[in-house]
Each structure stands twice: as structure tokens, then as C-alpha cells.
Image (cartoon, rainbow over all chains, first blue to last red; front, side, top):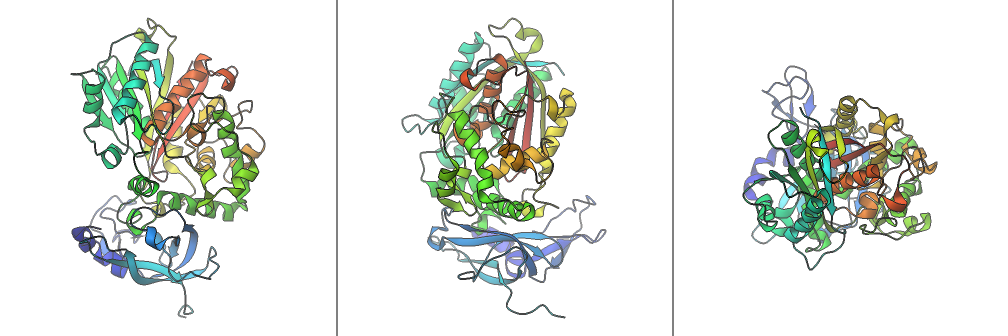
Length: 135
Length: 383
């Protein structure tokens, strides 16, 4: 990933920060500039809790260039507690039977292997939830 | 808008053309289409291509092809809409001719993928997804589709082998098409034994990496009567879009762009699913055929697998799909596939599909899909 792109994505990558629409309260991840429902701008930053449940998952055997050294690896779609679905890599899944609906939580991990002169990119992944949800 | 007809078709064999460049392939298809039409007239060239920059290091591709085909100095533009680029190129040409801006327009869809190893092609294809939030995380294009297939299996209690009927149908039809890539029939046992790409998707769920070009010559219907061949009329051309990121949809299993472009096309052609004699589906993966048939009104939600199980998608069924092999059997040179589909519908409507002929075919539909259902172009043709 190019440094400027990494820099401008840092809030989303590190804090799972999306946006919310002040007029209809819909929340978006990834962040949007214009609300698709209201068709208005002025959206505000919204950090998600990082808790959710697994909507779907797969294990990639044939990896794209740049990810071969970590293949096979699991990715999934997570339904966040606040509503949106997010696509993300899954972490700490070795020996675990993944299942649709299982609780997961966000962790910060290395996303991309270092390329020559490139940054090591860190960002969100989701792992099977360790702690019970707060009451 | 003027009525528009297709008066010439051309195609290369779909193969691993290691000895031929992207321009070579395009020129062969264009030459065949002009010969078929029996005219040298061409006022503009629309090139459908997705990956020439990524895989051939060549942008400005339309100029390169116009030059190689000795078409200079006509207008030449590349149209890119991911895997729907071929359908989008015909739509751009149709807009030009229907509006009166041009009279005779050439369309060529071309892709050259086999200069690279699979990991490079996989990364290039992932540019159809969200670069920041999907591809950047190593979520390949196949993986996105696998997420859909897993969820579909969960919601509708489907098994992996239930999807085999789509790949078997495409391979069976490809065996009847001399230009197709995979001309060997496959069985359910082959499907189950096939290696996994991103589970539950295996190699025999997936259209292969290959090279090819297909071309069309279109003109106003009023002039098409003078052509060497009986023209096939473009009854509808439509395009619709959905969110780039698969996760950003209210329901990822409902393909709104696919449904939307089909609905616009049905309205314009004044037909419904029951009037369609054959449907060239964008079967890049078997789950894509399932979601497409449901989105386009051929099956209720959760019931498209039954259409295949009951043989209704076969050549002799009531809704034959992928009649000359589809993306799975003929091959999927991505930016070319949408034009191959149109060439094949024209073959069917002319009654020239040989052993793959759908009897009495009068109305054919072809649909190109790009990204994870994020852009879709639908055409309906009439004999």
C-alpha cells in the first residue's frame, strides 16, 4: 500500500472509524462523504465498537499477489452491533470451527507483508470473541 | 432514438494465445466481423477491455487497436466497466448509433490474461473490487464471491454439490462450440473432487483465465436491410449500478444492479422473463448464475438451484442459459466476455448455432456483470 493512502485511511484502519449521517442517523463503514439515503453531505466521524457477529466466511487458498506468504487465510463479513456489514480478514482462527452467527471482535493486526521500501500496513481484523458481551 | 441492428459478428477461439498480442486478437475478431457483414464501413470503434493497463502495460488501447486494424483516423474509445466491459462497449456503440451520432460502429471486446501467473491475474481482477477496503486487505474477487455462496448455502440449506449442475451445463454446451476453451464434459464427481480456490468455491465453480476477442458491427436498422446478413435487432440496452463494496448493501444476496438493468431492458423491449428464449448469463461462478436468475425474475429467491436440478437451463429446457458454454465453458477473457455473449445470441437468433441451436429462438438476452454485482449491462436481441 502506498504511504499517502495508508496515511489517509489510518482512522478507519486503526479505530474502525466510519461516518454517521446527522439527518437520518444511518451509520456507514467504510466512511462515506454523502449519505445514500438523504443524498446529503456533512457526515460526521463515527467510531464503531468493533463487536459483531459473523455473516459469512471463507478460507482463501489461491491468494492474490502480496498475500501468498500468509495463505491459506480466512476472511469474512461481519455484522457490526451498530448495523453495518464489513468485509475483513479473520484472525486467530486456527483450530476453530467458524460458523455463521458466531460473535467476533476487532483486533489490530498486520494486514500486508512488507514490500521493498513499502510500509508494513496495520489495520483491523476480526477474531472469535474472547470476552462475553458487556451487559 | 433509432432502431439499431447487428449486421456482423466475429470471434477468435478462446484459448491461451501465447503467440499473439492483444492487438492481434482484436484485429482477427474485427476482420471476421467486417467480412461477415460484407462491408468495410466503420465510423467509430468501441473497445471493451478491463485489464490492458494492468496486464499488457497498454492503455490508450482503442487507438492501438484502431491503428493495428488500419481503421485510422476514426473515433476510437476504450470502455471499462470491470468484467462488464464487453456489454458496456456495445452499450456505448448502441448509444452512438441510436442517437444518430454515428452510423456504422464496430465493437470489439478483448482481453489478454495469460502473459501472467495466477497470482498476478488474481491481483489484477481484484481491482474490480474496492481497492481500499476489499482488495487492500487481501480479499480476492473469488473470496467475495465465496462469502456470498457460503451465506446462500446457509440461508437456503443448499449443499456445495447442488451448484454443480450449472458448471455441468456450461461444459456440456461448450463441447458443442468449436471456439470454446473447455470442450470436455464434466460430472458431479469431477465437481466435488475439484481443488478449492476459496471455500466453498472450487476450480470447477470458476471461469478460467484465458485470452480472446469478439467483435460486432452495428448500424441503423433502416440501413441494416441492405446488409449481406439478415440483421439481428437490439431491442434493449440497459445499465445499472450498485455499491462498489459488497458489504455495503442492505442484502448482499439481492443483486440490485443485475435486477435493475434487466428491469430496464424488459421495459424497453416490452418483454418479460417468460418471453426470453435463451439467456447468456454471466456465469463467472456458479453462485453468480444462481443470484442472476433470481434477480432477473426467472426464479424466486432461494429457488434457482432447482431450475438447474430440473434441467430447465439446458438447451432443450424452458430457459436455456450459457448455450455455447458461457463464461465457465467457453472461457472468460473478462473484457471480451460480454461481446462473446452477444456474438453467441446472434448465432442463436440466426439459427447458426449448430448442434447447440435452441429451437425456434426469436428473443435472446445477454447480461454482463462487473465487480461483485456492482455494475450490470443487459441487452435483449430479436431475430
